[in-house]
Image 1 (spheres, rainbow, N blue to C red):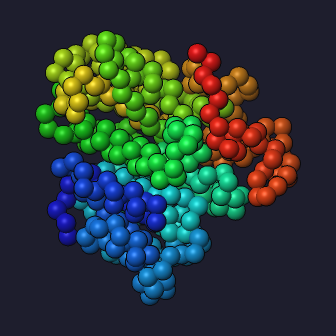
Image 2 (tube, one colour):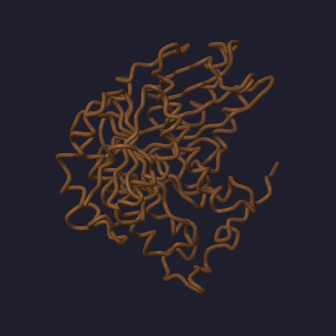
Length: 383
């Protein structure tokens, strides 16, 4: 068994294996990587030693053909090996793309086994582009709900949101590279909080109170800035990230973890200012954790990252308050709807008044969705 370390980064399925394979060479010392898939060629291409191949008897080195049930069965068949390989880590970060067979089917199994082994489990998962079709989107949403129930915290990144980040003429490879940067930033922020030498270190055990039980809704963002007022500038940029939920899906969270990375002149006052700004928008009324480091990789660069989370709402609980400044006007979501991810209604949110009707498809596209959303056209800023 590999030596136990505080953080285990696990790539599940094609997208997860590819992402983790690219991140593995730059992993911090307190983290190691593991890849899990049924596709033998994808595991070999990752370049990582000792992968876990699923479905060796049933799938015979091939994928699950887009069938999550096959992916789940293949993972269940390797339960003993997965338990062995997942043991020993305080935090297991499960990285996967939803909508396919292994990512959608096996990731919830991996999350469950890691949690049963005593780890805190944070899942980072992507949803398909809307142009990939309703069948794949529907499978992805179902898989996200299953993953949410097994992982302590689940952060969802919509691939459509990447179209608002990358340049309009960026190649497809750049879009997926952005996903890698997002996952890498989350890993760096969490691992950095626990690395020796931090200005304000955190105990890895703090994550157990931060994500106390499976089913926590979570969100992550990060941004960097330079110059005078860089900490607050980076904080505001992180809050404005298009990769964050905005509009009807934005909500305040009970728990907030903040990491600030700067140079030797980074002060506790700067860190407290970032926390105050984030608490004003995101919440953190029950738990706020702050970690800080002064080992910025570039002189003058400040990076602010945050993970916000809320434990599952108790039956009959009041609806969560909207996030200040990021919630569109309208009636708050019903408390019953808050038990699962609001992205389960993503198609309706995007289709507006057409949300309850059958889609009008032309060349495979839902023409009821505004063109700028379907085509990923970035609208000019109101500033």
